[in-house]
View 1 (tube, rainbow, N blue to C red):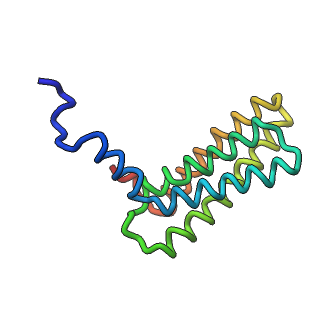
View 2 (cartoon, rainbow, N blue to C red; view 1 turned 45 degrees about the vertical axis):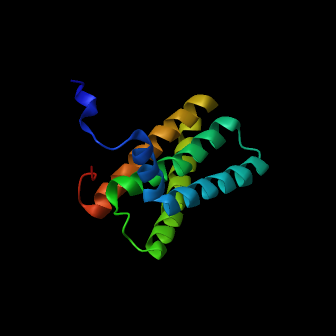
Length: 135
C-alpha cells in the first residue's frame, strides 16, 4: 500500500479547493503585483527588482493570508488586508533593496530584499495573530 494514497480526494479537487479558497486575495494580490511592476518599470527599475517585487506580492501575500487568516472572513476584510499587506510588502522590499544595494551588487541586493521581505511578511502575521500558521 502506498503511503500517499490514503487521501480520498483527487488531485483536481484539492487543486480547485486551493485555488478558490482565497481566490479574492490571490487575484487582488496578482493585480497589485502587476500594477507595481508596471509603475516601477516606468521608473526605470531593473528586472531583478521588478521580478522579486512581483513575486513577493503576487505569491507570498496570498500565502501569508492562507496560513494565518480564515477564508471565511468577509470580502471587505480580505480586500483591505490584501491592499495593506501589499503596501507593506512594497515598502519592505524596496527599503531592503535600497539598503542592500549599498553593500552588494544589484542582483544580490534583489535576492537579499526578497528574503528579508518574506521573513517580514510572516513575522508580521505571527505578531498580528499571535499564533503559528494554520495547517
